[in-house]
Image 1 (cartoon, rainbow, N blue to C red):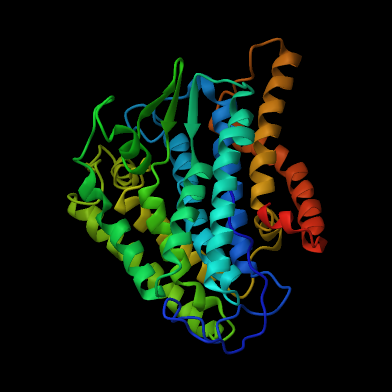
Image 2: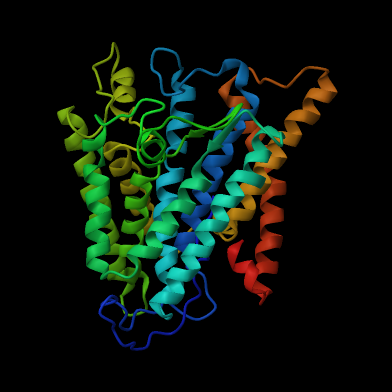
Length: 401
């Protein structure tokens, strides 16, 4: 997964506000040349959880179920492994918005918008080429899966338009989308009906015919993610030099508490907020699993309240210092994302060649974590090396990686 480069941190100075940017006054990030470690640390955590989840997809296929969150077909170990990975996409998309604000804090709004357009288009192209190939090792797959990089790319394109608005409007639009998009759930278009393709891209996960023999699966409908990226952008000034760390941490804890309280309330009412109601189970564990079984595709209000609430709490907790080794993973997330897919796929092929099987299928969830831990070391070293090269490079195209 990727984000706009976690912006460098100039010393705070006053900047002239424009009609569309009423927030750019003494809003530069912390200091020039530095990265914000809490952001990199949180990115690194979601990279790690994503690695585990994708290891499951490559090495646990013989035990796969249609949905690892399906309580009638999955074990608690598999359920909670998948639940942990739920944190990845929403936190990363929100951090992309935050990083976009940091990138543009001392730049004209048109420069920020132009960068978001170019970066968003780059990510969409990347999903359709290098990322898609990593999953299948097939040049012309029958189904093209439009996944998280695709969604981030389109979200950045949407944010490129939104940044021309006052920040309070961006926050209001983001909140309205996150809170209200489930009202659109009853709207559907059958395949072949006018509007089907655009609605599948925006909100209703489905298949879109591309050309004869090929179709696209809109795994990540983009509308809710636009809400998440807008909210991330809106909190950008909290990370400016003009904002005291104690103030930032207090605000983050308040957001975390508010989001998690709202999740408990909305989920507890078992009405609006998620298409999958929770039910009491035969044991407290099954009841808790049902309560936490929120919908990711597209992300429901309950899903976003839970995951963004946890993400806000982690940002507050790690504000002074996040785990350094996780920050390394978060310092070059796009590089890590692409590399880990190719490494996992190649390891699967190599293991199959050694065993003579079509592929290696591990017997338990514990093995998923062991394999992820085994490949993490080389991936971490490679990411650290690339981040060092990127930090020292003055080439313009490195900003896109």
